[in-house]
Length: 247
Image (cartoon, rainbow, N blue to C red; front, side):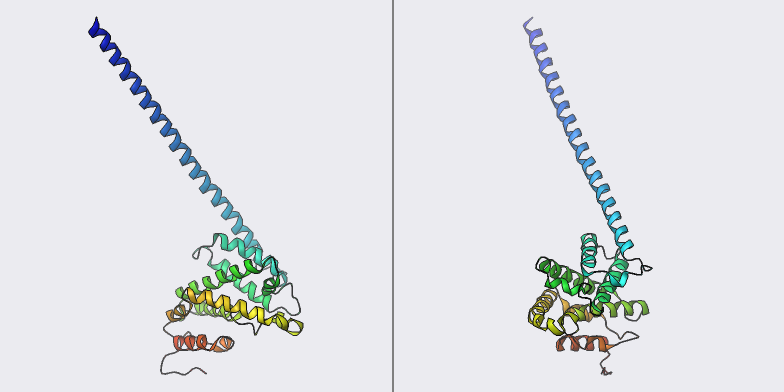
């Protein structure tokens, strides 16, 4: 009788242990299922958000939009923030090209301060955000320069575009906002340019220019006339063979 009681107790304890282990396994499965569902939902949500943002960016940069050259600097700034939020070089290279062209187009507008992209640097609320954004854009320009091949015509055009971006926003001499009464802003703007150049230098700006070891079919150094002298010399030595001289 005593032995039977011990056996029943052992069986009861064993069954209780098995039930406890099964509950723990079930809880672990439920927890794992929740984690998997969370990851899947997060992925689907991010994918949907990125798809919607890219669609919005594409709509913004429609080539047949007659008002594309008259968009305000603030509109360009906002769409640039969205592009940089999800930017991938391989997937968004055309969007980035259109962004750069839009920015440069805004800088060429005549007597329209609200259109000039650089005008946002004068806004107390947006100055720091604008500086951060232009730093990111210019460094992406450098990233593209690493990948482009000057001997390919289409690539040479993109190289000109991205170099023009670097030229435009590393020197204030072409900024129309500084003409006339805006001349008083030049010291502050020069300081911003120095800040941008310092950021690019820290990330290897000059080494980027050495990736091109041959001259492109069209090598127009007139676009570089406003760069700092050392930048100009670096580009000149990089893009021209030693036996040639670029005036």
